Image (cartoon, rainbow, N blue to C red; front, side, top):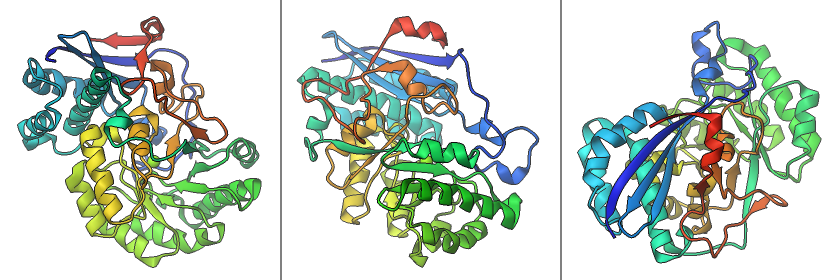
Amino acid sequence: MRITEIRTRVLRWRGKTLPLAPHFCTNPMDLLELPEASMQTFTFHGWLVVEVFTDDGHVGLGNAALAPQVTKQVIDLYLKPLLIGQDPWDLERLWQHMYRKTIAFGRKGIGMAAISALDIALWDLLGKSARQPVYRLLGGRTKARIPVYASRLYSTELSKLAEEADRYRAMKLRFGWGPVDGASGMQRNLDLVRTVRESVGDGIDVMADAYMGWTLDDAKRMLPLLEPFHIRWLEEPVIPDDIHGYAELKSYGRVPIAGGEHEFTLYGFRELLEARALDYIQFDTNRVGGITQARKIAALAEAYSVPVIPHAGQMQNYHVVMASLNSPMAEYFPMTDVEVGNELFWYIFQGEPKAKEGCIDLDDNTPGLGLTIDESELERFEVTE
Ligand SMILES: [Mg+2]
């Protein structure tokens, strides 16, 4: 099997988009006190879709959501030329070639998102070529179904939040106030957590996400205040580069600390694990370097007994979770009107499993990752090829 062509397309949503209210979700821009809603910086209204074609008629499908226009350029200019003519089964070598070719600029961020998109497409190809679902190539089924938690509950009126919380069996909420909002902002954050916890009771997992929006000082002050609500984890309390901050927060042992969706490659996660920075690892397969890296990070995390609960769910992550006993659960973005853009995946791809009774399952008889694109649906997008 040889790779004959690679097609990259950026799909930009043209349909209705719900506006984001102030204090919708804390984020790293909050400290700058800009006039516009800062969460706009972290929306995902465009998506890169990559297809890898082979001489025996298979098509592998991959994707990336970080800076899709630029990620497309990295693939088209630097990565595509080295893959054309190659055998996808030499995947480890191809990954190393892509990594080493772009190492001067690509180790983290956009370069790695580009490698990830192609790597996911290549694994999809291997599965289709072997007529096996990808998780079977990764070691097979470790669980009957994958428990998922609903990842939404953005900061809003408390009555609406309570209503939404009642729909889910496990869930994650977002904080709305950060360092510039002071002690009163902290109390408003606690109101959010208290509302959800009281609404669902004690027998349900509740997680809470600061989305990189706090300083270490803020996070240290919040930990003891959060403790009574026994959340399963506090996610991304500080910016991803503050590994020492993560380690300090974890060392208090008051609230479990989660992160990693903005970290890259096996080397990045070795640093986090060696620093004892996280109680839960949340890599995202379409950022860390694809399934080729995700499986290695999962193995390393297992050796440290740190569970892996990947960012975003979605097929490229679900297959890794299914094949790993150290992944007890997956994230799940419920299908909603387009808002932040996490939910845009539902509008682009078919085959994404829907949660039933708090779990998703993968089909033993669907080769590859199990995703397709309905080309007729792309009318709702501006497509850049
Ligand atoms: Mg997150």
